[in-house]
Structures are given as C-alpha cells and as structure tokens.
Length: 200
Image (cartoon, rainbow, N blue to C red; front, side):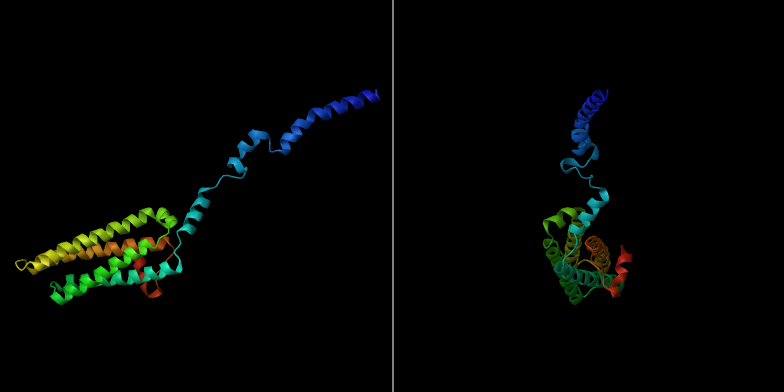
C-alpha cells in the first residue's frame, strides 16, 4: 500500500505541473489579457498619466519664455494705446502712426513666438494656437478698417472712434488668447503684471 500511495502522489504532482507552469508564465494568453496593459503586460496608461505627459511636452523653454514676455508686454502696450485713443475720442496722425507701430511689433512677435513651438507643442497646443492666430487675424482686419477710415478726409471723428473701439476690443482678445496659451505652457506673468490673469 505504501508503494501504491507513492505512485498516486507522483501522478498527482505530474498532473499539477502544467497549471503551475501556466501560473508562472502569467496564466498564458488569458492571464496577460486580463491586465489590460498590452504586449508589455504592464498596467494600462491612465488618463492622468497621459495628461501629465502632455503637460510636460508643451512646457516652454527659456527662449520661449523670453519671447513670450516681450510679446505680452508689447501687446499690452498696443491695447493700452488703443484704449487711450478711444477715451480721448480723437486721433492725431502722430498718435495713429505710433499705434500702428505698436500693433505691428506685437503681431510680428506673436508670429515669431508661434514659429518657435516644437512639433509636440504645436500638436498639444493646437486649440490654443489657433485661437491666437484667429485673434491676430481679427486685429489685422480691424486695423486695416481703421486705417481706411482714417485716410478718408470726409469721415468724421465719430466714425473713427467706432472703428478704434472695435480695434481695442480685438487687441484685448489678442492679449487674452496670448496669456491663455502662455499659461498652458507654464509661463507665469511677472509679479507686477499679475492682473493679466484676471482679464481672462
């Protein structure tokens, strides 16, 4: 009986080997599939991890921070100048020329900043980038309309004032969209310009 018991025990051990091997290999196809991690067998990437990676990929480098700070400053100058002319209710040729130069500078700097974005940044910031481009286009259209009105001698100050108000609004939107993009890239306003965040 002792020999028979030994044989039975040996058979049981052999019968159990395939299961043990499968367990050691992660349960075969079924075991690997249950992890939901793909070919590597690791856990699936969470949405939080994807968001973290995207946030890291779109962060501004030192050059971009410097470009943006110059752009933000000049865009605000253009907006302030337009707002001042709206309050005055009239515009002299010299004031008009100064405003035009400020707008041109801000728009050129905006284009330079957008061109500095890497392919990853362009992809990850597509919506924000498009908003900036749209705001820039609106500024250009409003400036062109104002310039045409200003050059016509038969148009009074009231009409010019209405066009100037539209331009100021477009510039305000331009500034807001710039800061939305900058914030997404981790660019913070200087302490003395912290009120921009409240303009959004």
